[in-house]
Image (cartoon, rainbow, N blue to C red; front, side, top):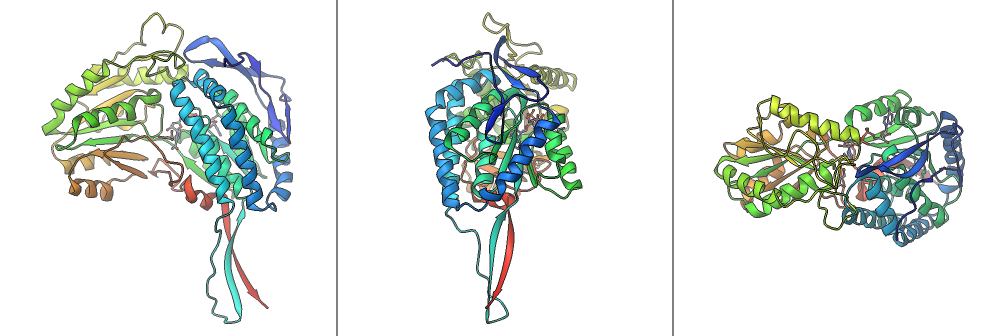
Length: 488
Ligand SMILES: NC(=O)c1ccc[n+]([C@@H]2O[C@H](COP(=O)([O-])OP(=O)(O)OC[C@H]3O[C@@H](n4cnc5c(N)ncnc54)[C@H](O)[C@@H]3O)[C@@H](O)[C@H]2O)c1
Ligand SMILES: O=CCCC(=O)C(=O)O
């Protein structure tokens, strides 16, 4: 089924769809063909945001009192609606941000699974009984929701990330105001339609689209927003945290990465090459978990490099809706410019561009989109900017290590700590890697990308506010512990 293009999407506030008070909209363009307008989304004002927060605050009084199982039933219904619209929403995602249709379908299926997982959380343990020093008293802990939660999400996982924030927020009794990335606001509107159709009470979920500086910052600063969960760049994340901290609100940040893969001397090189390509270049490298530094132990450097370069020749670039496309475009013009400027930077720093180009990709089907070929640099040293700064594009930096120990030190030589992987068959190497790698997600004989919804996810160092999302770990952010002391 083809989606309807060029429609206008509205804000969702207090259970109703409506335009922004500004009367202004912005076009959401297809990065594979910028002549295609996927839809128009609202450019909201502070007043729209205030109405959304007020409705979320009001709805929170009864939502928090519902049994967790009743909230769970509504998440199950939202999952069913999302499932019935999987292909349509995945197509919208591909058209809005460029990832292939297969990846978009996988991500939408992930959103459905996350909703079902958190529906079950509504019936799980939320506290402990702790012996009191008073033998006649009962002491226990319970958990209470924060109240209104502001969700600020990026464009790279436009279904999975909002869902992995909204589902735990809702199941633990919070109400939500979602401010999605403007690039993928049509996908976000369709996602919110699923919650609306599932029958969530008015005000429990609200959607306000618009500029980050106005709506996002407004959410972070809003006195009636009790918690802010943010995923995006470090620069913006820190601003959000400062605004939340200044008024004593709880906040959670998941931000950038510069994720390493280590190829040990005993690695299965074919598997390692496949994992490097998949981890580094799927979604055009626009995953926070994407591989960007490939640290190869000297003995296998040349053999690995040869196999990697040979395999890259097979990558097809194009519109993510075409079945033959392996890699789509960059998600927007700014991403394309950033990627090309880092390729230029790598050359200026003296690295060797072994694959790719400093210009955008060429081809009859590529002229209307933000396409770039994958780039692979050799002769990279760890202190170069291309080895230190998050590029968020299909660029791999190959770094030579004299030993496995040096490979670990190089992998840790970054301000980020999101994910890391190693290819080795040696159990000692595996254990050293697990122990010594400073990252929130460490993966052995597997690519750096790939997050499982039932496990905690988050980073160390500059990648995170040191909290964890997903799995049962999400309860720590979305609730407060209340200690109860009862004496008859
Ligand atoms: N660690 C993770 O889990 C994770 C996951 C996905 C993406 N990311 C990171 O996200 C970045 C790419 O996404 P992006 O370009 O959408 O990030 P971004 O920081 O530009 O935007 C993220 C969100 O913040 C909003 N925003 C912008 N300015 C704001 C402000 N002043 N106040 C409040 N909100 C504001 C945006 O509108 C968007 O909704 C990369 O750095 C990537 O590593 C991290
Ligand atoms: O972009 C951040 C999320 C990454 C992710 O979900 C994955 O690697 O699967």
